[in-house]
Image (cartoon, rainbow, N blue to C red; front, side, top):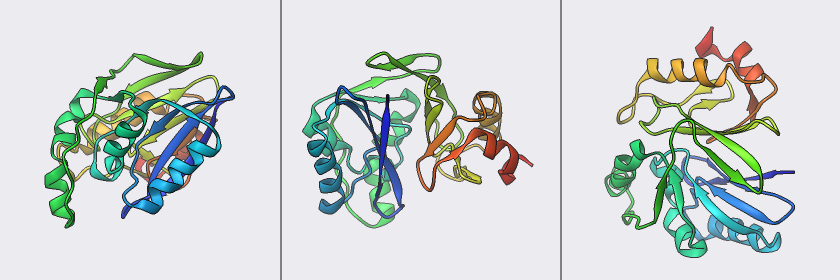
Length: 212
């Protein structure tokens, strides 16, 4: 049985997630930890639960989702999974930091690209990968059909969608991707977003104002 633990990080109140099972195997998703306190909270949880981080997953590479990426890679020494289309976003990290008014070092990590239609597996639990660009060019959603939940990054939120006014954002593309790839899934599917509260596919289909 998979369990998920969230941590709210950095200036954007970004959700960093740890996904883990009874074997203590785990994935760290979107490490946005920016300061010592946030890093300690994540690190302490991993140590207390005696978790073994097997992968680092990125839903996309915007600055608020990767501020702890170098720490995570250096600490756990496991590959980083992301979509190739967001490599250029990751490469712009220093420039993004300057825009927000603080210095950020470029990251040096081992990356394994993931693509639409592929699956990742954590001890037999499969996660389908959907490429849903529009918020960022390489935004992906990780979906576990068995336990009916997804990690959606900044694609879909409770009552909202990801911003499309950022670099290579595209409103029509994002709306179409959500409709054709996410809204066709079981309405009971829980959605763990990159910001804010969890929601469900059924709730968003019915109440999300962007789909009225």
